[in-house]
Image (tube, rainbow, N blue to C red; front, top):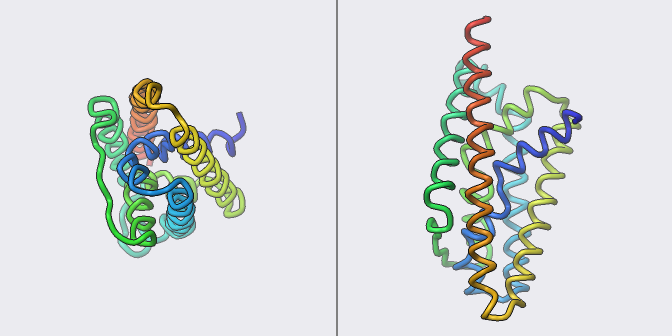
Length: 202
């Protein structure tokens, strides 16, 4: 598997569009399908801008501005991912948050922390340190497009489901969130082990 696809899968696992869709259930219930897609698109653009910023400048900020060893951030990012994965596995669908306000306000609140959080920023900084600018930007754009498409598709299906099927649909999504949590935890452990190994060899 090429580095591009490996890093794209890594970032997509952290973004977790299935979890984003489930967590936004209260928003989806309050908005029409058209308004929900509009909000989702704006949130995707905001999160993409944040991710690109940290992909291109994150390592420089930590090394030159804060003067923090990058392996320290790698280990911390792994711990954060482990925490998030445990929450996904244990809580599943229960961590729903209701968001209120204008469509623009809702989009910014969806972007952070639902589509971009500490774990995502950690992965983006690592991405920028390992890949060229063009390839790293390509990974970010590909993941953002895939996340938008997946959430939009799930929303379209959910909006048009019959009431008798919606409960089964939601339970399947909750199971997928927990399964994704195991992969996210594995990525977190890998980040911690890589950071420790780099410390020992430096």
